[in-house]
Image 1 (cartoon, helix red, strand yellow):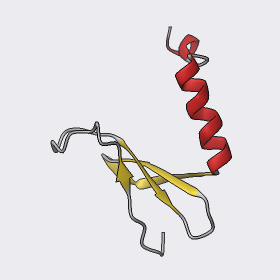
Image 2 (image 1 turned 60 degrees about the vertical axis):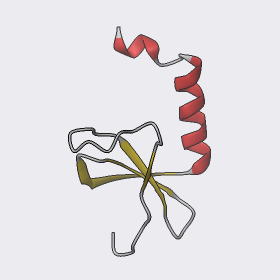
Image 3 (image 1 turned 135 degrees about the horizontal axis):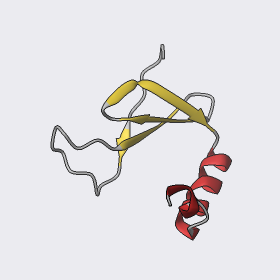
Length: 68
């Protein structure tokens, strides 16, 4: 990415070096950027609407069957 973002992670994430977590940033075009802290070069871009729908699904347990 050619522009500088301010990456944020959950306040629940510890600062230990081996603690990987998802980090978020806003892109200038209003997109949401996501990356895994242990592989910061891989970035996924989404929209606020799609991210909201995904987090609602996770919270509601609608994706739990994927891990059984």
